[in-house]
Image (cartoon, rainbow, N blue to C red; front, side, top):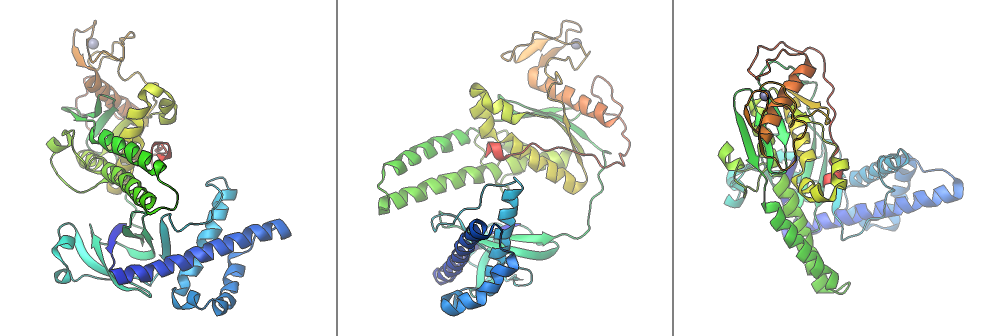
Length: 424
Ligand SMILES: [Zn+2]
């Protein structure tokens, strides 16, 4: 759970000191690690690193006065994990941290207190979500904005500041053993992801389509312009610093616009091409309407290599969309089914099953030569995808896509997710 923080100027300074100490300790211990590796052929254990801290604090008193001690220990732990991820091929080699990057510090369990005093807050905080305060060691009570209630037990809390100067707290929560049992008993939706419409979905009786969010292009143009400006500025100059901030802000806007979970509620507003709050809303809406969602397993990496399509696909963030769908469905006990991407979803007639082998990408509409049914390309694909998903789940279906009575699937279904890294 991520919440926005609104520290005062004074609190920002206190946080900056802790960021500085954590960064110092990270760089110091990373240096020690590489040195030990080259001289002794081994890595230092986390306990060995932590054992150096008391002596170091005597030499550098600010390390003790400016920073909560457990922040440094959490930093050692992160470093250990980062090195481990590197050995095991999950991540890149850990790097030394610079002041200009995103800064973060972690507090272990039991240090965070959240108090909810709505009335004490200015209206800007109350406009959306719940205003509250969180108590941070060595800093005090910081204003925060929650968009939902905290469920479960608070584990670690990570406080970060983006290069553009926004503060966040990521709160790790232990939700206990509340595992939701998956069931396929309910409405089934088939989804076709497309380049003309973002998604077209069919629920057995009706089809809906949602247009591409065109605003992405606008942000992208802006980003390109700001990056050009940045490259022209002299290193270390204050104008360059300003330009860097602007670039960071555009990046943030892009990622916020893709993920934004607040805003309008009706389906009609999704279809609005100017909608800024898109993927969360769309996946939430579809999840609310369905127990099972069937999608095509897109080989996104392969498709991005195709230059003509790459931009539109990378922009539209399908991988992220499918991930949102996946976890939202899991949360309610639903199922996401991915079907083989070689399944000819567009070419089959959803009415009679005839295969129209010669279908071109440019043909948005076609008429089945066997049953004379007129098809809209994406709607027909969504219908076929839905029926194919039902076949995979072993649920009965009629070729017309009429709703059928479905049994409960007791087995845990394994659903593979498309990695999103290649898209972001
Ligand atoms: Zn037909």
